[in-house]
Image 1 (cartoon, rainbow, N blue to C red):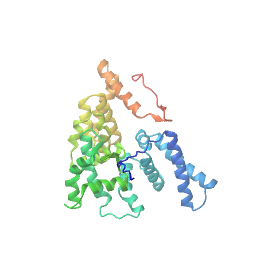
Image 2: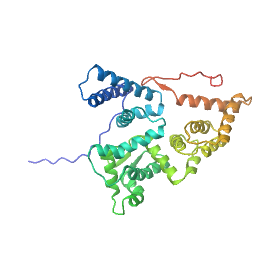
Image 3: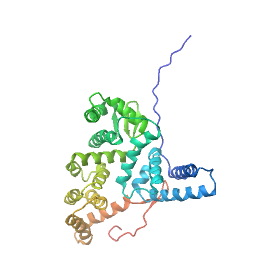
Image 4: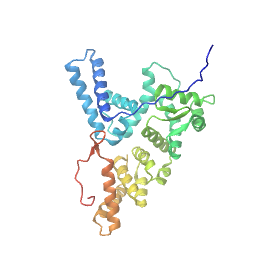
Length: 322
């Protein structure tokens, strides 16, 4: 007698690393990589070179909250290590790191596997940018396959032609590059929210829709997209919008845009300095409280990671914050 069991669609997920696992991964990754680079077995010389590179990368991750958040994802940690290894360092700006990671995932990773594709990394990215921005606008990281196909169909057709199959494209991105992951049957998301935010920021820049970000200037869901847009553009309008909104969230993001912006008009820079520094000297309790909370908010965002349970701040606390 034959028994026919029902077919079960099983979707497996990769658990995030703990900080100790991040350390172990980077040390072992560099050890193996250095052994291959020098074409010799692991010996004290290989171990020393590997430790030097691993310690440099670990220090950079610990000192960057956005990098630390990405590093717990095994795929993204591999990409960070790859960029760090072959450049000898990480790009000085986060937006450049995201650009390199996307290039590795969409292009060089496939080339390394010996797979051919008629689409370049840039062509794939321009399609995924549409999907990333729609996800940001809908306040979600997840999307159903059928919905995603409808969203990218037009852009994909302009890149490949009307015969392009959106399902085949998305499944290929998930299977080959890993930039998309399947959360459950026919439900996908970007491998990390920061990649969705980077691609959304790139799309907003490409279609010149800075006003979209201005409308969300004090919305926490949009803050990283705003920063990454500012890093590629003149941040003056967004900073002035944030000053005019005059909330803790908007003024904190204004400072971030000032630090990371590609360009900022001198008068706008001055306006922000006045808004905060004068606020800390104000005798008006509401103005003083707002300025102090902005300072404290930025401090909490920039804590240095020590381990899974501990983050510290090495700078002095002002009287206003205390």
